[in-house]
Length: 136
Length: 169
Image (cartoon, rainbow over all chains, first blue to last red):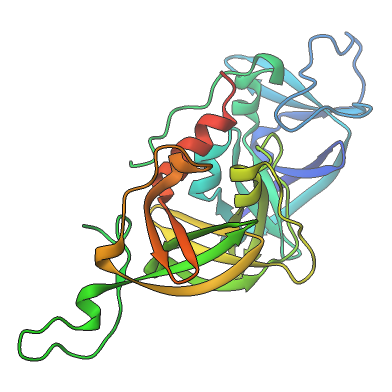
């Protein structure tokens, strides 16, 4: 990977495509011998349709699997094509897991912070977003 | 008073002999329409009007935060005022235009049903927002012109109220 670029894993949840930094993904799970009960299903990204794959994330000395519908591949993206989430959106959204966008083929693809997504947990009992005063 | 709090003095002729010029007595606003209502931002906060590009939706976003689109390489969030104020989303099509509002620290593409444009109002006619009105919590002032009242929006109040509506209790 050249300087000034980063590797992104592209994955799909439902109809939407997301990106995450490859360094956040320990491995990709293709089967679930222990069942999917312990894996993270519905998150702020939505509910996977058939959850055929899992993104395994290392966290706090352990591992957590996030269920996704598919892993589309790895892309090397110039740093210049990574943009942070606009302040207005970050002030409004009830999650800290959406960090920004990777501009792929001129379309913004949401960049997800997987460790934060895991920490926030299932959507039904997600932790509130950190307060970010509008006047700060 | 900051630009966020007040409209803009117009770039009028130079003041002569101590008499007030247009710049001293008038304020400029950029107005849009939603149904029967007229809303405005202080004119200096509006940087341009652009055609809305393809949208990327944001998961778990409130319905008034329609998504984002790229404009000259910049990613802009799209705020639907119709949905936020009236619970009546603005119809989006290939020709839909958005007003870009830049009120630090926010830069937002705002959707309304119709773009009216620049309006000049005498400073002395600027009044406080009414206590009870749709979108009243977002307002900083009401200014009248020949066509009726215009509700002047305050971006900071708008973000605070929008955030309160988007975070479940």
